[in-house]
Length: 155
Image 1 (cartoon, helix red, strand yellow):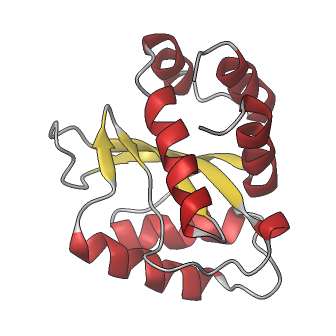
Image 2 (image 1 turned 30 degrees about the vertical axis):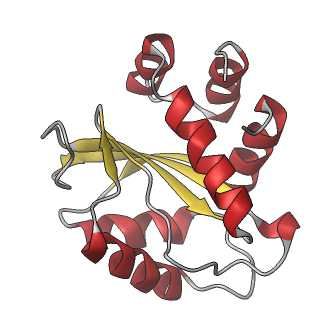
């Protein structure tokens, strides 16, 4: 599990954005990636293509109106470039979630190493189990509010 400070640092690097528009997964991913703070060596279009390839294998929607999109292979080359972007969608998006609910929140992961990738996924999966945290997500928090909520949950 990641420490709360590391997770908040990843989110700070990726950014927190509301009102992401789009009617398809491809549209939403591209709109989100155009807002996300990306390393100079990555374009939104390259990341979008990788995310869509991953989505073909199995939906990254995890339930409770949350998805955790991530590419199959690492696109990040430096540890300090790892990040998690958090996006609140303007309109719910159907993404074949296990509970059938449309997605309203994306946690988009870009990591450099497989082990760190799994650790980040595991930390997010634990976090989104907390009812209090899910309630905070519904309020469309800013970065400070989101990190405060993370610090108040047990991972």
